[in-house]
Image 1 (cartoon, protein in one colour):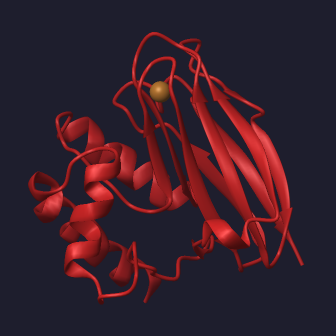
Image 2 (image 1 turned 120 degrees about the vertical axis):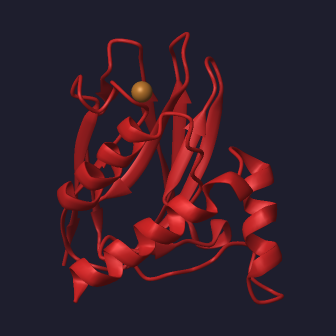
Amino acid sequence: MKTISHLVACTLLASASTAFAHGSESHAATSASAPASTAVTKEQKDWGIAGDAKQASRSIDLNMGDDMRFSPAHFSVKKGETLRLRVLNKGQVMHEVVLGTKATLAQHAQMMLKHPGMEHAEPYMAHVAPQKSEDLVWHFNRAGSFDFACLIPGHYQAGMTGTFTVTD
Ligand SMILES: [Cu+2]
């Protein structure tokens, strides 16, 4: 069942890719097709759901570099927590962080390799230009061990991945 819904999501992502752009414009595009009052599409994922910035209990910095590493490469949250991830690109090339599971990220990375120009935007990802930062607000309402990664072609394959734990 999970596999089926994921395949559907990927198909939708692929077909919608041309209509979506990076950055804040993408959020505007998403909200246009969502119910009136929601800023972003809040879809429950295995690793949580889009968070409300006003509910964020704390912030953590997530640094990205051209060495294809995240720092920290692991973070831990309590189930029910909403976190503001301040995603900083310390490098000279574009990087991004995408939250997910090992399986969803591996599959998504494959798709990004096949379609390098594909633009994607979801509330569980942040694309960050060199020397810039973006906030990703996420509500961690499912316990477990999860992953995050930069899915820019070549980066994931170079090991630009990390893990996070949501404790019960
Ligand atoms: Cu990267």
